[in-house]
Every structure is written in structure tokens, then in C-alpha cells.
Length: 249
Length: 75
Image 1 (tube, each protein chain N blue to C red):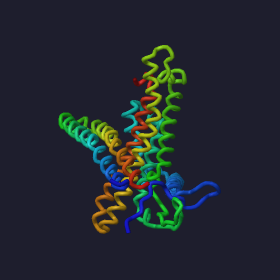
Image 2 (cartoon, rainbow over the protein chains, first blue to last red; image 1 turned 180 degrees about the vertical axis):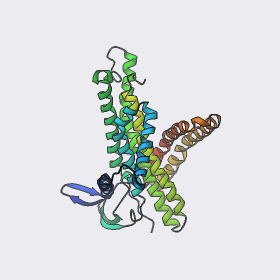
Image 3 (cartoon, chains in turn blue, cyan; image 1 turned 45 degrees about the vertical axis):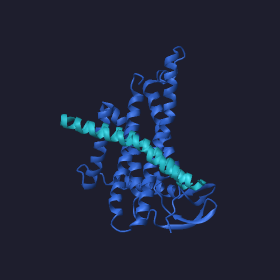
Image 4 (cartoon, rainbow over the protein chains, first blue to last red; image 1 turned 90 degrees about the vertical axis):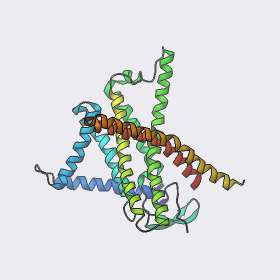
């Protein structure tokens, strides 16, 4: 029997009128992981860091250094750290949660597309287009909002609207379209990579169950990290472009 | 040809043709950044960041083809 692969996430149960899919379950697990980690970690903060605290500090410090090299100033890096680091850590950890044993192998009986099937209880959050589109919309809205806050509404709108100059107003129209294209490219890049990884692992595990999936698992660990990095890095570059004084074009 | 075989051919063509240009561009990005890094080893961390970003943009095109192929295959 060939493995079943579904493009959309399957609904496990309904919470009132809200359908809860298997992707939602794993993303909620990721959120709880971060919340509990932050709570426990906060109580154990010490002036002389232990092993765990040093590790977390290394991660935050390297994100800050990278942001400083793009934005140019330390205070700007600190100001936009919450947005960029949240996107990076959330996508990274949720991608790696999608590779844990049990994800994709624990099946539950249910209904999908009108007929009864067995489907996984957990599914990598980014393997569902809803997750990536929402994340991309948050990123693009935040980019524009931060740009408006940094340079003011009137100056920022000059990127898109030039009532007097026809050539510049056409360029501004292209800029406006590119904001919506950003949502599509952000979301499809992440979704495509993670979903393709899921399909790859399923097919390889079906063809050769022993030993051979291991290098592909390493590849997926790498892809999960690098896609989170790229998502955060692109958001950072677009934020840097939005908050700079001069229009980019 | 019946519908199923045309669909299969379309899936194979989408992913085969759709990966040509990204493959060429990723190869060029890799070779030029390796050259740049060997000419100026101090700047390799900056070049590496730019290289990964550029590769991600080029790879996105292949991923779009992959998504189209997967949608054709699994719906």
C-alpha cells in the first residue's frame, strides 16, 4: 500500500465551530514549549550563566550581531529583535518538531475530503499553507507598519503614490504590487520546502525503511533551519529597507 | 492519450523544465561566491550571507514548480 499524502492539513476535531487540524495541534505544542521554556528559564536566570543560559545567550547574541550588520546600528537591532527573533525561533523549532519521531507516524481515524481515512495526529506546522500565509502576512504588515512608524505616514506613502509624476507613479504601483507578491513568495517558499521534505521522507521511508532515511533526515534538519533563517533574514532586509529614509527605487 | 497520462506528463514536465533555470542560477551563485571568497577571505562571512539569500531567491522558483507539481499530483 502506497503512503497517503494529503496537500491540506486534516481536521482532527472541532472546537466549537473552529476546525482544529493536525498542523494547529503541533504549532500549539510549539507555542507551549516556548512559553514553558521561557517561564522556567526566567526563574533560573543567573548573573554567571550556566550551560543552558550560555547557549541561549549565544543564539540571541549572534542574531543581534547579524541584525546589527544589516541595520547598521545596535539600537535599531535591539528595537527590531522581538519581531525577527520570534519569526526565526518559532519557524526553526516548529520545523524541527515536525521531524521528531511520532510526528507523521501516530495515526488517528477520521474523515478527510468526504471519506474515512487514517491520518497523522501531528503534522509539521509549515507543511500547511494556512500557517505560512498567516506568518507571511504578519511579516509584511509588520514591515509596512514599522516603516510608517519610522519615517511617518506621509513620507512612507511616497514610495507608492506620486500623483504628479506619471513614471514615478507607475514605479510606485509596481512597489505596491510587490508588497502582495512578498506574501506569496514568503509563504510558498516555506510551505514548498517543508511539505516537499515531508513527502520526501515519507516516500524514502516507504521504499527503504532502514538506514537510507538517515541522510535525508539530516538534509531536512538543515532545510528546516535554513528556511527559518531565510524567512527571518528576508523580513530583516525588508524592514531595513522600509525604515531607511530614502525610497528604495 | 487519456487524461491520466497527460496529467502525469504535465507533472513531469513542470518539475523538469521548472528546475533548469534555478539549477543554472544556483550554480553560478555558488561558483562566483566561491571565487569571491577565495579572492577576499576576510569578507567570507558577508559573502556567505549574501550567497545564502541569493540561493534562497533562486531556489524559490524551483519550489514554485515543485508546489505546482505536488498540487497536480495530490489533488
